[in-house]
Image (cartoon, rainbow, N blue to C red; front, side):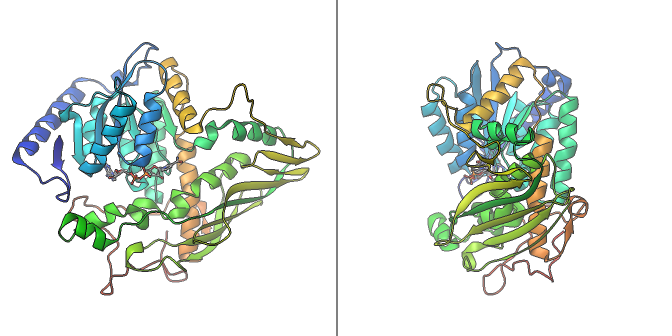
Amino acid sequence: MNDSDSSPILTPISRRGFLKSTSSVVAGGAILGALAPERFALGASPGDTLKIALIGCGGRGSGAANQALSTHGDLKLIAVADVFKDRLDSSLKNLKEQHKERVDVPEENKFIGFEAYKKAIALADVVILATPPGFRPMMFEEAVRQGKHIFMEKPVAVDGPGVRKVLAAAEEAKKKNLKVGVGLQRHHQTGYLETMKRLHDGAIGDIVAMRAYWNGSTPWVKPRKELEAKFGRPLTEMEYQMQNWYYFTWICGDHIVEQHIHNLDVINWVKRGYPVRAVGMGGCEVRKGKDYGEIYDHHAVEFEYADGSRLSSQCRHILNCWNSVSEHVVGTKGSCDVSGHIIKGDNAWRFRADKNNPPKDPYQQEHDDLFDAIRNDRPYNEAENGAKSSMTAILGRMATYSGKVVEWDAALNSTLETMPKDLSWDAKPGPAPGPDGLYPRAVPGKSTAF
Ligand SMILES: NC(=O)c1ccc[n+]([C@@H]2O[C@H](COP(=O)([O-])OP(=O)(O)OC[C@H]3O[C@@H](n4cnc5c(N)ncnc54)[C@H](O)[C@@H]3O)[C@@H](O)[C@H]2O)c1
């Protein structure tokens, strides 16, 4: 186990572990230095064994690794990285049970801590980036720098500087012929693909009005008291926020970015473009209290596209309310329930799955497509759209936090960087609880949100 900067919560640092990890960094650095980045950019031959590293061994990372290991051809999971040892261990145990032959991670390839990703990336041909999204830009940039093929989860950033970093690295990835998949799996879902083909062929004419929703339940929370009881001591502020990442904008982006991105991305896909500005309102009505960090529990945003058409969007995490996770559009010749894959009007149509050849799970399909592109050297780079759809959601958050009209260019060029300069367990992340234990939230009309 490589535990050079592990959280004292779960893995007390040992001199032996420290020496081990230091020597492996040196070794990794030496190997990297000896090989030009172009060495890694060459397309894999169909018969090659592809070495995979998983960075961020939580729910989705474990799922993505399972899907990657379920693609055709020779592959092996050879390295894993996480900030918390218990997450790494349980993920690896499950993956080993699912793919006995394809999981081969020796102790020295298990990396723990904030710098762990660099060491795991160095060992792989393909990396899976599935940490919370605040860390994605730095990890994507590093993976591209090291010349690796990449699957990264959505969102790919939580602020303007992060999106710009991803866009720049996406260009670099193209130059290096790296393949990049982004976990916006609706792009690999047969019903969406069939619907989108018809919309783009003009089935309902020009698209003039759009709606998108992620109104649903509220996610997990780890109350400070429970964490302290579990670990037998007070947590540093960084440890607490990393355990409860969903509730902090610098790690999560707020739920408009973390979840609603899927629906906003679908509308961008329909429009084949991105909004030019947004206005919105939001707040925290119900999910109040010390355990719920700084994010809102609802956002309602109106996005304007270049042709003047508007997207009305809602996302809400409040129980016992009207729920919907869906997208709908109206055109000059009809309308479409995009998520239901139903077109109404002159070209009425409804997607019906072929019972003899049912569509694949889109989470699996996106990995089948990525690995096919890697093995057969097909162009494949979803990073730019991933970055711009992340930016769409960030734009929405900036509108609700500020209460102002926010222009796309201003949002993208924002210099407000949410990531703390120092990433260590004793460092102070940006948000800090007040004397009452509550974290301040953005106040529309007062907050600088971009
Ligand atoms: N495409 C989808 O439908 C879908 C579904 C679920 C989650 N996701 C995305 O996947 C990502 C992860 O979500 P999750 O539900 O798996 O969360 P999770 O909390 O279960 O897992 C995140 C893991 O990353 C680790 N981690 C955090 N910071 C790290 C760092 N700096 N370096 C290394 N490891 C770090 C955590 O310890 C944890 O094990 C999010 O971006 C989320 O939006 C996508």
